[in-house]
Length: 421
Image (cartoon, rainbow, N blue to C red; front, side):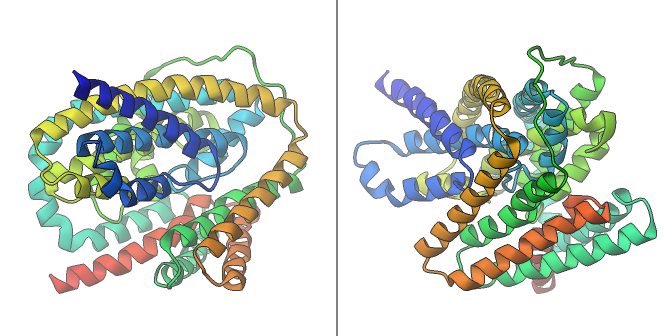
C-alpha cells in the first residue's frame, strides 16, 4: 500500500515539475532529469528505482504537453514545439488562444491513447523491422528530406532556397554538436535563435498586436481533428522508435497521415498532430527500451540506467503512469493556458516580445557561463542562428527547413553506422 502511495505521489510531483519546466523557457526536461539521475545514489537510499522512474516519465509527459503554451503565446520554442510556433501563433493572433490550447491538450491526450492501443501491433512488427532498417536509416532520412523539399515548396526558387538554408543550418548543427560545448547549451543557443528570437523579431517588424481573445472556444471535434490525433500517435511512435528521426520528419509524416498543414484551414489538424507527436514520442521512447532494448530519449536513458531489468511489469506500470500523467497534465494545460491567454491581453505585445528576447538571451549566456564555454563563440552562433531564422520569413519558405540543424548531423552519423555494418 505504501509503495502504491509512493508511486502516485511521485507521479503527481513529476507532473508538477514537468509543468514548471514546460512553462519556463530555457529549462529542458532533460536538465532536470540529469540532476535527478546525478542525485540518484542518494535518493535510492530511501526511494525505489520505480518511484524515480515514475517521477521521470510523468515529468517528461507533462513537459511535452505544457511546453506548447509558451511556444504559442510567446513564440519561445523547444525541439518538440518548433514547428507549432507559426500555426499556434496564428490562432492566438486570430483571438483563438483558448481553442489552440484545447487543440494541443486534445492532441496530446488522444495520441497517448492511440499509442497504447496500437502497442500490440508495434510490439509484433517493430523489433524485427528495427534490425532490418538500422543500416539504411540514413537513406530513409535523405528520402524524407527530399520529400520535404518537394512537399513544402511551391516552385524551383523556393526549393533552391530551402536546400541552401537546410544545409547551412545543418553545417552549423554538425559543428556545434561535435564541439566541446555540451549538446544542451548548443541546442538551446541554436533553437532560441532559429525559431524563438527570429520569430519574435519578425513579429515586431510587422507591428503585431494581440487581439482580444474569445471568451468562449469554438472547438469542434470533426474527422480532421480525429485524423490529426491518429497521425500524432503513429508519427510519435515512429519517432520514438527510429534513431535520427526528429520533429521535422515527424511533422511531415503527421501531415501526410492527417491531411493537414501548417497554414490555412488545416492548421487546427496540424497543431493537434504536432502535440500528439511530441507527447506520444515521450512515451514511446521509453517503450523502445522493452521492444528493442534501446532508450530513445534523455529521460528514457536515465530510466533504463535506474532499472536494472526493464521487464513486462515495468512496461505495464509506465503505461498506467503515462495515462495518469497525461490526464493530470491535460487539466493543467487547460487551466494554465487560459490564465496565460487572459494575462497576455493585458500586456503590450511589443514590450513583452522584447522582454522575452532579452530573457532568452540572458538564459543562453547564463547556461554558457555555467558550462564554462566560450561566451564570444556562443554569442556568434546565437547571432548567426537569429539571422538564419529570419530568412524563411522574408523568403516565403517553410521554417521547418531550419531543422537541418539536427537532420544533417543525424544523416552523417547513420551513414557511418550503415557503412560500418
